Image (cartoon, rainbow, N blue to C red; front, side, top):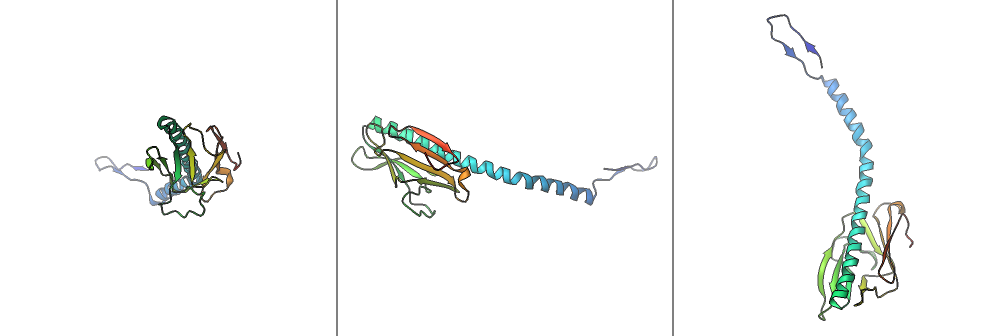
Length: 176
């Protein structure tokens, strides 16, 4: 910024930034934003996957506790009422409901909806994950694969559930 001083008695004028200086500043801001964009996108992707992992783990632990408390089976059941294209019965992209059948009829206890852009698959387990009245899964083992809809396996997270209901997390692989 340049200051022009006028002779004594005249008014002082302060001249601001020129158009060229303004364009250079905007160019620098644009370059910095373009460098930060991909890193910010990766942070958002990892956060969405972590959110689904946390929500699914919480839902499983809560369903186990409800099965023990109610002395009745409680089921995590995939939702199919969203606009996402569910290609197979193993796709849980729409989310899941925690359902209890304690009184003979199904009662939805809680509904979970994952953020957009996340792919959730219950590999080999189908559309339900049932916890018996003892709080243990009725099938031997379950595996949920969480990843981004358009990304490779490097951002994939797998939740492995053993026969006792213990949840283990594996990152960057699709195997337990």
